[in-house]
Length: 60
Image (cartoon, rainbow, N blue to C red; front, side, top):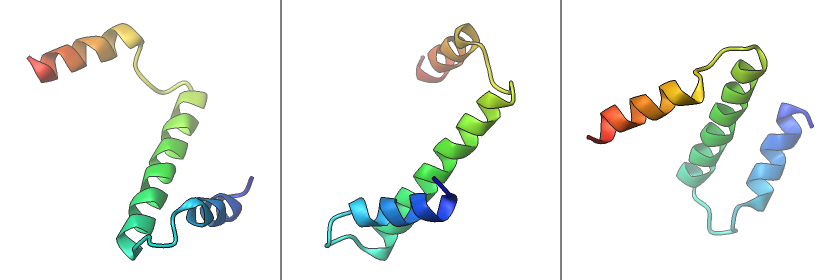
């Protein structure tokens, strides 16, 4: 699915009462997920044990 197709589908899936801000937030979220997935596909990222340690540090 192309980026344009994904954006259109994302907007179509929102309720009719969605505001411009709702649309922007959803598109930004999907974009961030796509960027993250692409980074992981490229071998960029952190091992799960490092992520768990970071989260533990943040919440304690």
